[in-house]
Image (cartoon, rainbow, N blue to C red; front, side):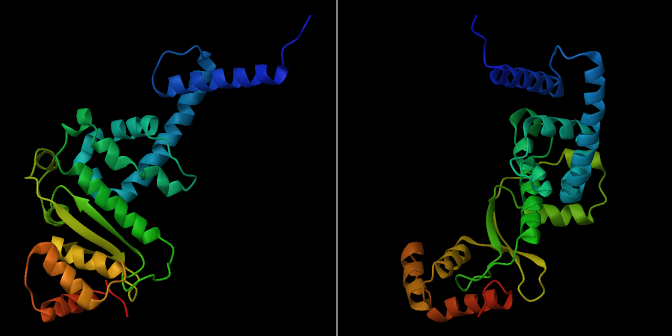
Length: 247
């Protein structure tokens, strides 16, 4: 009588056990023993508690708006957005995606996903390793485009005395905003700079290694404008003063 491969049999059993555990974590019916369910419940509570502490540190303003729904969101996030990285902080990377889910987004202000992405980008800049400059742009930077004026939202949230219910019910008009996040190479602190479309064009041109004359010509052609070279020089001077450009 031919016997099956015991190694394959064990692998199948492990796989089936993993599937049952996953069902339990997602709140689905499972054939796991009651003792195992009890032990997993304790483990799951510890995991969610640890996740919640991490997320509150990364998303303090988003947390302020979410309020009493926070714990439910943490469980939903834990179940549906498993980390793709072994780095602990990366557990928080997809939170803004969760907040953009249609069935959840309708319960919160329309800018909340943008706000969370802003807070996450600040963490990325803070934790970024030092990089060698490959152009005149400060090396540790990231450009993000938002659907809402998120920098104004942040200023409001930091200064308002409105209660949570007022915050949760405050939608704002859609208005795109481009933000340049960077680490100031002198102070080593996080900074951000709101960009117009014209300033973004110049920054991207500088980042690609173009010289002043070439940028001036392409700028005028792209926007259909005739500007003096001195206006472009002033903009570059402002970017240097903000430490977005380095010598």
